[in-house]
Length: 114
Image (cartoon, rainbow, N blue to C red; front, side, top):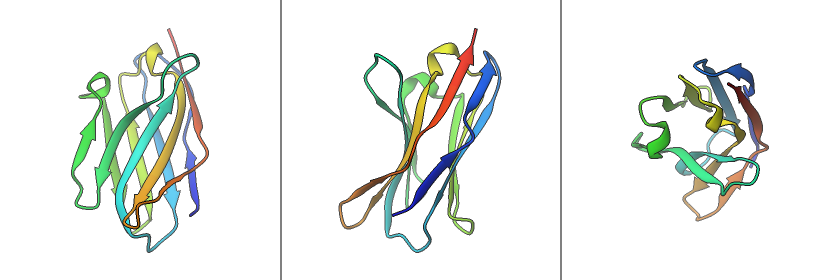
């Protein structure tokens, strides 16, 4: 399964970025997720969205990040506002399909300067 994340970069604290993740069409999607891994820290699920568009967020990003997807364009998004230095991490998208597999894409680096 092909997943391609993009949109990372360097931004000042308080700024915004939008991450995108293009995925192959016609996937039997159960849940799609954005996951991040910061150096020296445990990785965490940042946000997820189900096939029925139910969303979930880790507490630290609630009110600042928004996960969405464009079903016509087969693209998952993560809109990140009010970014903080602690949001600095490699961000990955993944897709859990209905056959029970989780498919990962390459990460995109987000760096937030103070």
